[in-house]
Image 1 (cartoon, helix red, strand yellow):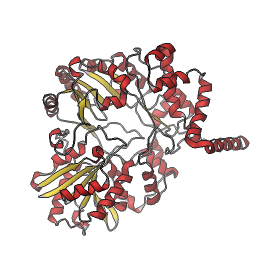
Image 2 (image 1 turned 135 degrees about the horizontal axis):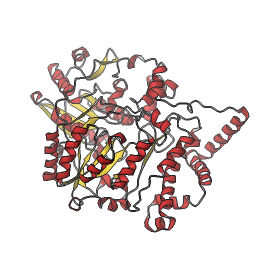
Image 3 (image 1 turned 90 degrees about the horizontal axis):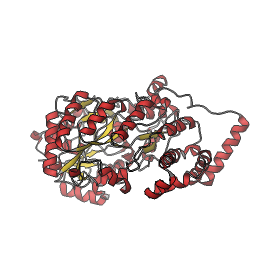
Length: 571
């Protein structure tokens, strides 16, 4: 019996409500003929210290430890944990899978991880276990593993990768197996009341009661569960890391049977389709929506492209129980949408939100600030257009999600940052940058790589400016007294003070208040000196202002020499 201990690397400050689907799929996907005993230690949920992890490993006595790592910014944690385990348990084979494998060269050279599974984990992991058993878990001669597709490792002290394992596109997608996973971890974060953690975090206590009114009455006190109808994305956004190549839907009958079992066994009244690209396969989605219409369920789509929906689609989805859709709007500037390669227009963005309000479907538009080409003008453009999209019903939940863009490995934006020298070209400099992303809040300016022609101190206020101007637009629509009476949360209290000043004045004050808050008096002095120098030089830097097309195309025109350790990286 070969014991395998799987762990998930935390991806945020607080435990996630996203179920560890990769772990579930790996446990189910290990070839039964290998005679393995797989277990799972939920690091994200329990947040154990390293001594507790050591005790778990000692009690489990695994031959293999498998890490599932979704977010590259948590490389620093992975490195510390891997090196700790390598020191305490040098004979245990360490394997890493998940999106973090995009930096497999760094992981293999700087941590104690022995193998990275790149791409589809299930067949590759089984093939690796089989080969390890054949070689009595000896990895001194890595030549024994060079024919396993989807596997990265060090050979002659350099990363080696033969290519991706071919995916079986005929099989359905494995869903999260609540029964198996309940043996290893609490399921509280992954299946809970509709009024529980997921929507409370995204809506706040003040909005949750209004959101619940959108549900069928019988579902209000039932549970919310996560389901996957598809995998991958048809988009090629330049600020996004496409780890999974392609897009496919699951088997329809398997999906329906799974949802019916959730209703029966877990008192589920609402389904969250937690994927990036719900609805892109029109034929499949039409069948699914017909089923949902008769199921008595409410449901939410975690990621939908604005091109996917039109008036008829939105009406049909609403009639089938849809109460929530997330769109990655990102910007209301066409220039910025083109740079991002969103393949969408401002009008399509606006129509998608309008239709949500019309059909009483809650939405949280996601916004990204600070891409190359972003200017004061594009920020104003976004605010002015977004400000017209306030729901007509004051009780209808109104929310948005705004972040500064982060350059993460695998993004065209990351390649662009490398080409500009924002990220050092040595492996040590690149590692230092990636480690600096650990536990960083993307709505804060300090760790933002500045892709604008302004000083970073000058644009620190952008996040607050967009956020507060949208609240100001809300107050203007419903009236100061009305909002004062009915909206008691901090953001509306701040908005009620903010709106007392004329827009130009509040913008000016906000800019310098945020500057001093984030950078102190030193930051203020720095900006004053820079402005004086610019006046005397009579010269304005415009390195990024003229960026007006896809970063992918720009990158193709700027050569980037590869380090020796980058040559075999998966493309």
